[in-house]
Length: 174
Image (cartoon, rainbow, N blue to C red):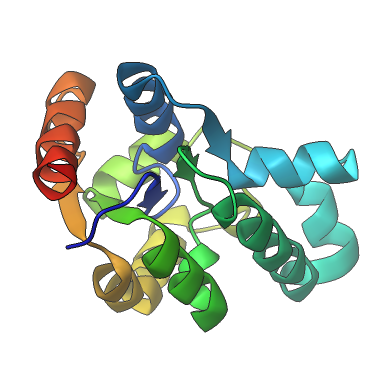
């Protein structure tokens, strides 16, 4: 593990990156960023609209530019989009500029957490469970390769997740 001023959260949608990220940033008194929200703010439209007009490739191009910008900042907590690890350049940027935490939980839990969310373009399908399973199988090895630390957010309360991350993070910053 490495010394870092930044903490980056990776994992599938619904794993808790934004929720945990906000609480972690508060605990560390650092600014919090969400790469998807930053893209929405910079474009003036939501992610679903970007997917609709530019497709996933267009979105991934925007995401890569945003990850580049955000990893240049110092002393932040960043929640990435679930697919940020798909591009090697993003993985390299995250790994070289911060402490990367992979938040994971069961597919059942992710489907439960995201079932009422109609702002997730990749889940607008007849069978969200099959789609989440597919995304997990495509991305899990990339999450694990990129991560300095992994924590299961499925059964732990947010406070316990934060405590585990802080313990691991402080272990490398001491």
